[in-house]
Image (cartoon, rainbow, N blue to C red; front, side, top):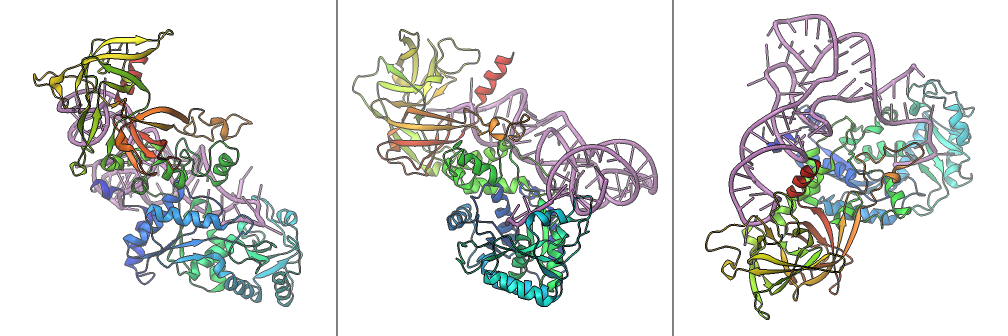
Length: 563
RNA sequence: UGGGGGAUCGUCUAGUGGUAGGACAGCGGACUCUGGAUCCGUAAGCCGAGGUUCGAAUCCUCGUCCCCCAGCCA
């Protein structure tokens, strides 16, 4: 079994393959991704999207995009558009199969009438509090509603008048007549319709009664002739109810399969909590680059390919789990390594003067755009007497195994020259503000004709030619692997990482970056992958650090410190 | 204490009666004009106890632990 094969097997595929083998659905595979348009999609939804669209693609089937828009008070057209954009960006195509549960409202009403006529549904006048009381508890049975045995005629009349708007919100419901003593509380005469005088984002004021999710969802899947209704674990209990509706109505019956939703370390993935982060201003919005939303990840610089690869790698199972966010970052780096052009960007500049370099000479150094892909060619980067290097690449008193610059040490400036540090200038506070170096003219391009080697290679920019830029450094939003792990009385925001955003305003980048378009991604050599933010302008470049490069030296130093 | 699910390296995940495999993370090494990338190596797991069997992660029994359900949310 190859590496790629190892991830392609899961229990859902096994079921589908068995169904195909037994011709259960006439060889069809038809899935759907059914979001509620009440918020933005996040990486957890990506798992579901990749699963549903991926399965359809792999088995020659179809996948619908359907909005489960049954609650007008929570849903908005804005979310519909954002969701469509995110699914498209992720790389999936629903063709002409864009649906809305609200498209089926009339049909659903007819189904409800059918159940009433069958004596399987009734109009109940109990308040929501009373319904709760009558429902019983997990261990005690409920009791029948006093309205449970209304005649079919009365139920029909009342339900029609509910639709006609004769009754105020909350005054009545339509309930399925199942069993108030059922061990599964969802089967204790669940509400099918509620009265809501609310404007729906698509049907406007046409309706003042709205079907509940449980009634709507299974029948929508049935109407769309979905073969495999894939959903998350928390709906396992609902399946009995779906089966009941489908069987009582005698309609096409899809097969529901539940899988474990994605959890990510150092991340929260619940719409409610993400909304809280936005509303309380812990982040700048749904597309804050620290958010696990698809819009946030996109702005951060994530590629759809990396996210899809991640979704493949994590697999699909029924056991709750928490995936290490490091795996997501791995997928990202792997993708970006192949495609991101390399450039020089100095985040924390330290001035370097090459004492023996001619005052007004400017050389164009030829630099490789991507060592992983020679086809991406080369570019010229100007070099001159005054440069900036990374402050962190110089140590006055270097530790063991330090390959970088230090007094008297020789290093290579990548694609340029070997330089040796000859003097260190400090300000009155003792802070190093400038380095003086000499260069070896024989080493142009970065090679020494005498074969002498240096261990360290630094990136640099020419002070006179570099562009100023702002760089936003992101770290994990939460400082605990499980952000929900809090002290009594605190909520998850107590685990917010105070250092999740660091803004650097004095960065210098090579001139080829002039006019870089928002969304374009680069590797700043030796540092990480960066993406031009939507705030960026021609006057002021703004970059987001998508993810840092793996930093072996940081690891060594950390180990040294421990010792 | 009702019902529905689930337990395999640190993490995620294969396996469906026949040598427990992969990925990430870790560790070690090689190579390198990115301490990047790449390559090689390495450690690490079947929730527990019984049983069936020549042979059990897999089948049976009894336990343990974890998750979900009492919205007119989805």
